[in-house]
Amino acid sequence: MALSPVCGEQLDEQRKESVFLRDVLEGLGKQQKTLPCKYLYDEIGSRLFERICELDDYYLTRTEAAIFSDNMVDMARQIGPGAAIVEPGAGNCEKVQPLLEQLDSPRGYYPIDISPEILLAARARIIAQLPDLEVQASVGDFTRPEVWRELDDLAAGKTVLFFPGSTIGNFDPCQAGELLQFFATRLRSGDAILIGTDLVKDSVVLERAYCDSEHVTAAFNKNILARINGELDADFDLSLFAHRAFYHPLRQRVEMHLVSLKEHCVRIAGRQVRFAEGETIHTENSHKYSVTGFNRLLDEAGFAPIRHWSDLQQRYAIHYAQVA
Ligand code: AVJ
Image (tube, rainbow, N blue to C red; front, side, top):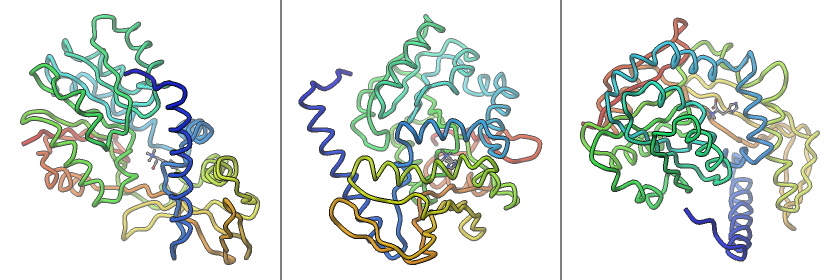
């Protein structure tokens, strides 16, 4: 996992910038303007998201954590001894720690993330706390096959993918199915996935989670415009946009938008983009599933649903499914 030399990094930065510009112009050129939600998560965005996770209105994080802590013994028993845990998009690797501690002689922990800094710090922390565990971090985009090649020769034995946080909800059901299928093809028969999903529920509860009373989600959403201003020479006036989040019951998802409060033009890298009054930029989707709906998705992707754990209010579910 060598870090690239400085000149390579500079080239990389330029390439990243032009991909970002291309994505922004392409998204804002559409009939329904959009911006890819991955751009919400720069350093400031990631910090704002961490604050969202601590909000009273945002029930997801603490509900998932409670389901894990209430059922950890059961989950570890379900996984069984000697398992290797692979975590795509592991970030700071905080959620996996109690599982690693509970498992019967796990074979190793293999986090994958695009941010080497966060990953290496997390790896050091886990090694300090669980010195007997093999920890091997892979830097890269977990949706690309290359990064999985390093994991191809995990010693024989069961592998379990750990995918918490309702991250799967960011993908539309079709893409989510493709991602699950991609995961399934990286695994062998008898391997499994432990995956968290937010459940379909009352729209008032959902909308409060994405339009919180402390306006942290609004700041998170608007940060994408600040990021474009800072990185791409643009002049978005953040005060001309409002945060909007609503539940779309047919699509079973919360949509996040930025609403233009009046007709105006924005300049981005020498180009003009026009906004009508009330026009929106669609910035993120958060899909919600019923247990049966998600089981169907797992099944279609090549995972046999084994069981799930939920909270008393049925707000959130953690599914365990095995490669057929
Ligand atoms: C990181 C995709 C799980 O959809 O709940 C939270 C992102 N956006 N508030 C979610 C998010 C606004 C979050 N996920």
